[in-house]
Image 1 (cartoon, rainbow, N blue to C red):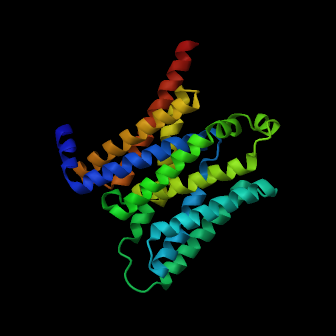
Image 2 (tube, rainbow, N blue to C red; image 1 turned 90 degrees about the horizontal axis):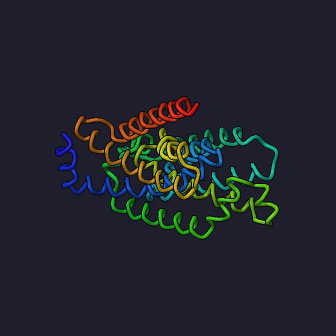
Image 3 (cartoon, rainbow, N blue to C red; image 1 turned 45 degrees about the horizontal axis):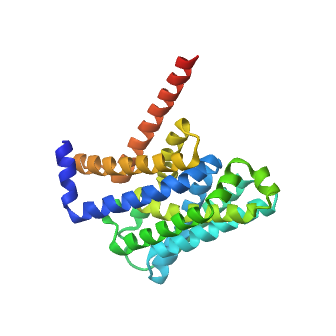
Length: 275
């Protein structure tokens, strides 16, 4: 079976799927770690569903829906982040509003678009095996932007993640850095959406980082381990989904979830053993 799984990657569409999976794992490992340590997991879900409005926009005006998703995701993320920082509104309320309005706009625009929308469900549930070369190039570009931002602002992001009071005493622009962080979440969400769909974005974005955080404390180490885990989950999920004729996105998430549960058991066992 293992040999059969590796033989699958002789096909071009499987190689493309593996490549986009690895690229997305890099973004998820980096941004997902920041999401987990800042305890803003559900913001990614809100942004993902708001991005559906951009998909509808792309269908309605006849351009790449992924480009529309990027625009809407960034608008939702920055709007959500700015309002949360500048007003006393509850963040969870804002997420719910953005979530609902984005989905509603997307659905209405799709309804108003003439013709048959054959690949619409792929944005909800993912379709890694049908990622186009154009979308692959978009993923490469988004990944590059995220890596550059984190490289340039790593110390500042580290400061606001673990000690916001310290960051403020050092006159760091905490609000601006927060907006940069949510913008990176938006870009990552659009990438993840192509693999597992809007429905399961949160899982792939956060599970690898959540596993790594249980056993590590250094932010860089958590990011590296999360990247490796994400790549492993994606590769194994692709192989198993093809071999057993299963939905690839759901298979990837199921493997990730089982591994997370096992990590919880191991963590608890180590605690009991130490006591």
